[in-house]
Image (tube, rainbow over all chains, first blue to last red; front, side, top):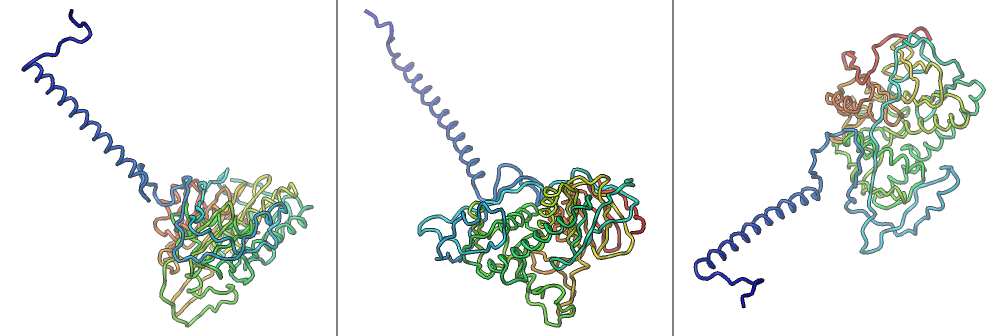
Length: 143
Length: 312
């Protein structure tokens, strides 16, 4: 009785022809996958590389929000003085008497604290200056 | 043309090596406003003065290479300075301290020798603001060894902003705080404040006058805080890229902004950027008035035409 779910394999030249088609298809898929993978890796590298960006770099001073992560200075000597707790600076609402005090040195083997400067753009006034014929109440000038 | 301006109370006194002027719309609050201003000035001096050995700035500079935890006000001053550096592409850099000192500006300007025969040392570029290790959450500061901060470009403006805000909140009055030409306003001032424009904030000669209804204004120039060192003219605005006084391209730059810190950041950057300043300022959208060495005036960002005010 014939097996309806597993038709008999072609034989001879037909079987060889089918094998060649399978190899060709597999080769094309492999090449396509390799090309796509290379492109993805390249884009990832461009975006992760220091100082590089996938987008055009803004001109210096362009007023956009920015986050800077300065590098830790070379040759810095960690302090060995015990830390001063943040609590000492909280709650009084006054800055009087606060002074620079040595901070905790990073523990051996740990990374230095990440430095972050978040900045908002330079902002124009709500209203630009207007001309007036009044006498000045005060003056702006270099000092 | 604005023909109305505020009538209120005013007082002036020496502060931070310059003159502090305080205007309020409400005459009754002047005494309290002056107390707040002096309190703010004293705090900023304790935190940011280069000329006080006990200031936080002096201590941080003296211990460069060692991590320190700083107070809140000094932390805010550092944040402001680093933001200015980031927004100006490093044209306004707080690590110019050594360069400024090398130029001879190592004491208050009034005690500076106007004709210093000592030769200028070899100029070195600023260490660079990116080398500062700063954590805003813990207020932990680590300067590279040999680095000295100078917050002169932003600390005075920060004081003006803080004082104006505090006074308006405490008194409900409209207020203008002017620290040597760096001025900040807060509260409501019907008609605005009439502000004269000059190369030198202490000038008394007639000049253009504008009305400031909100925000702040600052002016930078190379004609003041200038002296001679080794036979060469030098001034206090240092190009971080060279460590020397900036080449003089503009006589005066005045900028209006939402805050005095923003205004002073822009004016200082413009002096450093020289010929490139107009393109940079146009991108910021800030109203600006730049006076060239020949007196030619360039107006940007909606700055109005010059109109001289009446007698003071």
